[in-house]
Length: 207
Image (tube, rainbow, N blue to C red; front, side, top):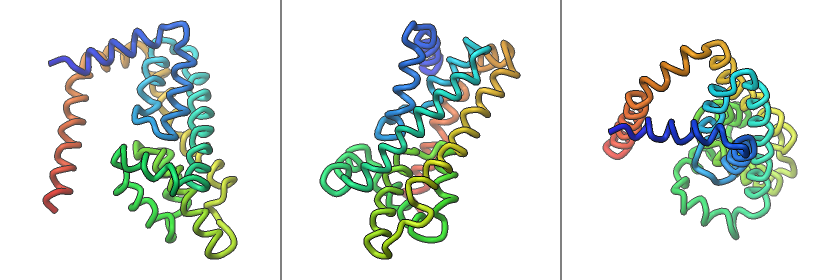
């Protein structure tokens, strides 16, 4: 079943659309707020099929993603309890948010923001939860410390920049060989990722 080949071809066609840059930027923006599709899904095929503009696309993705994260931060800061809490429940992010919340409330604050920005951890959860914990910190201590908006934005730029520019560099250097390799092995890679996710869920349920 070549499900991932189909999806790859879909995003390949989408990357050639005249509005592809706008779609990529919008996806990157809303992914940092609530959207489940990661920014890489559009960035990678865009870089592959327009390799000379890979770094430009990476820059746009970083900017859009961080702007979205700022919105997510302030949603958590100002509107979590009346509105955002229900959205978190709808997308089943409660456990992830509680874990992030505990880390942010302790000594892991800055490191957790960077890890969330650089790794596949849903950054929307990091952004919203940072806003929530910053608000709670101000209410309890009078200041947000390193969870304030300016440190959050700076760390987000570093983490998101490293992630997306690393992808762009690898694709730029890999060229057509990487393009052919990805297309050839995309289904194997995709189903391997699905298997790892299933095993992780089973492990969490059983242990």
